[in-house]
Image (cartoon, rainbow over all chains, first blue to last red; front, side, top):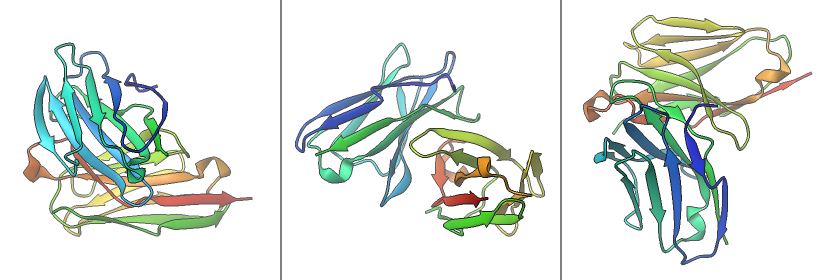
Length: 112
Length: 114
């Protein structure tokens, strides 16, 4: 157990809907990262927050947004969902910008 | 844009045999990770390689890094069934200024047969 907690573990929703994925980082970690793992795109970096501020952005769609709250937990919001958004979404956290990040168990999103 | 390639994509090997997974990356980096992933599970960190010539070993797995060639290898010695999983390398692009933003390889699915 890495200490990074993601909820829910599984989510099934219909096309066009909106969902929120939640991540609680390890105690003391200031940085949170979101990754998407899909069959066709592989593992892709989406976005990073550090102490509440957006730090780096990857291939994140405009329909997706994220934030990190003052208590350091993070949420990834996915809207106008499409079938192709079905994937495993991972959150990772690290102490700061220079140290290794540890991954949560992931949220399996299925869009039907 | 940093690109990371792994080969092979799929590897079926018999127990007791040795094999090597290769990870090539396109731009200079000073940090490379190897991860293991079981089906539907999280990513388990195996090794962090930080400098040219770095070699790390854990059990039947040994990882090395050649920053000049932009190449890392994961060598499996005397494979056992428990090593069956997908293995990813991941590279940090120092130009991003963020040491933990990772670009992943395609993954190598390893199947060890009896």
